[in-house]
Image (cartoon, rainbow, N blue to C red; front, top):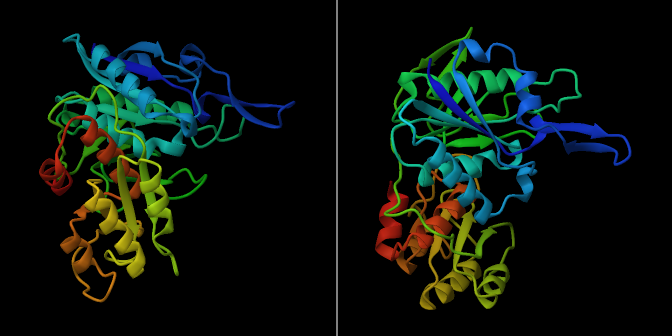
Length: 326
């Protein structure tokens, strides 16, 4: 029987309500979650790893790098066919993209969690974990990189996005759609991933801080200049529409670029990408002419992950452009 490494990090799937604190807190270790998950023995032999009990909103770059190192180590044995990372859903869309970059190779890495805690009616953790182990053990999931498996959907790590605060089907692939599904215990892959970005090396540390600035009505360049004054290592700008901002935000970006700080341009829209389509002041044409790096279909959160890890891996401006171009 195939072996699958399952790394438990905490999150809602590991939580119950503390009546004194008045809300859910992480308390369940891997054994407790596995005890609530029927049917795993018929799918794969599970190697359980208790990595931590960390709310996903608390994760740092250092912790994500450590988690990726743990995944790589657990995937080394030849009879381990894949890995599952169990975590809080708040930042799954960021963590899965980081794992996509930090865990090379053909073995699938599947990230899952729960939208209801273990004390709630409708606790979805066991079903999601069971589906995730099925996908990690499935030969057809090889060479697909890191994936999110939630509510029966199989989503690519570079496109999976949390779209709702507490809906079961919160995770969607908004640009190219899911790559498959799990239904009735059967893994069905309907397409291969269109692209997968690669780093030249596994970074020892991420470049920090990396700032994310969102363009808004009337938003000038002050947030970007504050980031520049605080010795930022890089800046991601989530522009309106296809890559347009207030002209002063662009002027502030030019100051950062002149100072040698890479600036990546994406869109604040949940899907699509920034491009040089508009030539009015602050339009995408002028951002590209100023030297901003286009993020492709990566949104602000994922672009920030890519910039931090890309700089940490030693990518120069040309390398960053090639990385974001996919």
